[in-house]
Length: 126
Image 1 (cartoon, rainbow, N blue to C red):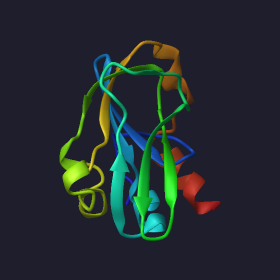
Image 2 (image 1 turned 180 degrees about the vertical axis):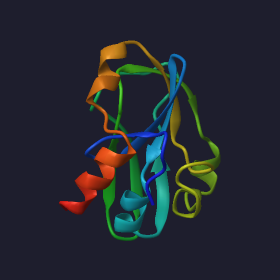
Image 3 (image 1 turned 30 degrees about the horizontal axis):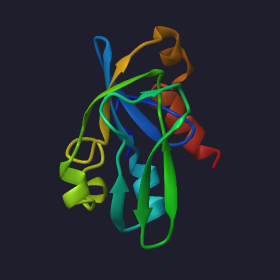
């Protein structure tokens, strides 16, 4: 499932832009490929990342995968709920399973993201 109105990376992260803040997580495609998620290592509030920097780790019964920052920004909030209940990412990756919120520090970093139509086309090629 690809949600309209969100932006996407080729590494299967989604980003919801709201003013100068981005809420982000991993896509439905990513959580399906990972399988049952059992652990999440979140970034720390205040940490700064460049677009495509490793910022979190999601572990499943199959593998551990890095999660990359979709934009250049500073972490302003993390979803501590998913540390206690990592399965929220499997159950609702676009709402309850969000990973963190970033304050955008470089507006141009958004230009590298795909819209929902572009991401759907990208998935067809995988």
